[in-house]
Length: 276
Image 1 (cartoon, rainbow, N blue to C red):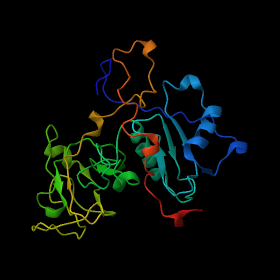
Image 2 (spheres, rainbow, N blue to C red; image 1 turned 135 degrees about the horizontal axis):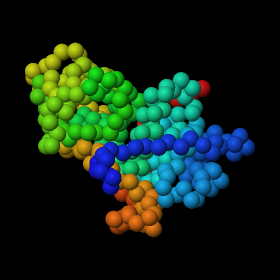
Image 3 (tube, rainbow, N blue to C red; image 1 turned 90 degrees about the horizontal axis):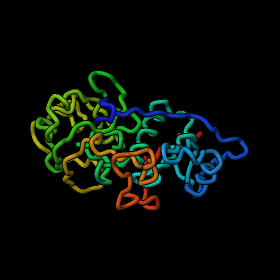
């Protein structure tokens, strides 16, 4: 994206401070936003409100084993709850932070919709990649939102030779850089350009077949996926931004949230066996 100073891109600044004191430690934020607000009111300076998202890294919320939750889409608050999993890796934690922040800046599990596990949506918002990321340009475990648009995909006519088709302005070369693809919890060989081993049998089938990528028992047709980086919303659901600073464009929106906080579903559920 283009910035007022002529530069491009987005810089994320993580400020790690205001650690919660032992006396206020809460092993289970339940109900999540009521307990969250108790912590936020004590540890988060109100003057930071127009400029920061507030994140609490905790053990559990609502007695569940969800990896985290955003306070709506877009939003300004987020919770990451991998604390109960003593064996969680730095990559899993980073991927979960980026996933929940993605909700905060306007992304759903399917980009523009809530359809998870869409094979043509190559984003950290897709559960397949939250803990793993991608291999991009030969570099493994890259955590990223979608940078390419991929054409619609029909589960009933999965074709490994044709694989994915780009949607302009995405190019074949853009998809060729993306590998480490995952379908039905299995990482497959190849890249997102062509000859994709969708069923993970290490053989490229020339015949089309049906595959249930989103595990719902129905042969779905997924619409073309979006380039996430062209769709981000930075106003935190109308809570972030200070018009007094002279912004050229109002940060207000007609609707405060695209997805209201009380309509948010828990994010990726982690096997309870990983609890300490």
